[in-house]
Length: 330
Ligand code: ADP
View 1: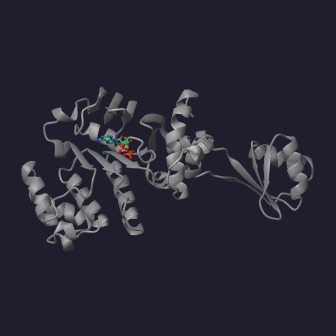
View 2: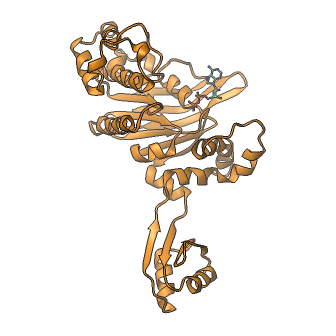
View 3: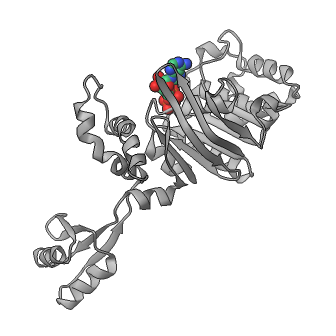
């Protein structure tokens, strides 16, 4: 279990982590979500004692990491996959780690198998792709068979097969009762992997809830209705306070009205309905929803690089967070 209490880190003028209080529990995958620059890596470094907090505390099972007697047996972390001695083979890299941490050498073969690197174990790490380096970093994290695992953006550079592999690995580790804390700026990735979410922006806590709660709280349910009397139902739904959009020739998308209300409205007016279905908002939509109020402000910020929709929403989130907090949260 990780417990952060008022955790704060300032680099000069920059407040990288701003009074973060949260708990990461065992037995589930906790996603640490936030746009680039939100403070995820800094928080992870603070958890691992690689940086000292300006104020506040963070503990692992009640103790600061510096007081943990056998670090690799308690905590496995992948922070920067390329931060390895490139001249060493994967095998030698892991043997060195095992020896300096008093771990059995036999464990090296086990973790190499586990991450699928056995065949290239004797090759030098500097020739590794980012995906292979990620796997090697994960092997190192698993070496001490730790109860707590932390991965910083582990899917970066992985192909779809690698992403699926990591996702399943994290779920399996959590199912064994371990604490799994994984950061990402990709909402879509967290949606498929995490049980619980801790969302930050500009170093501050935005949300601490389950994935389902996050979607429910940050997105409106949309109902799709297919009917041969599309326009009549649209008029009636609007009259009841629904927000209505056309969805093709014979269907509508309605928000602000529930499924029962729409069904009853159609029945009361003798309108035939051929489909009435809820459209579940994705985590990405929820994240966009959380950030949409700041789009104008975002557009006014000079010099921000244009990027894809996800990266863009992520960048926007940086601006919205203070607003979300000031307005009483989500
Ligand atoms: P994330 O991992 O969410 O992308 P980081 O924790 O890397 O975010 O960074 C948070 C903020 O702190 C960024 O503005 C970053 O530039 C700043 N920062 C991180 N590390 C340092 C450092 N060593 N010195 C100065 N600023 C830093």
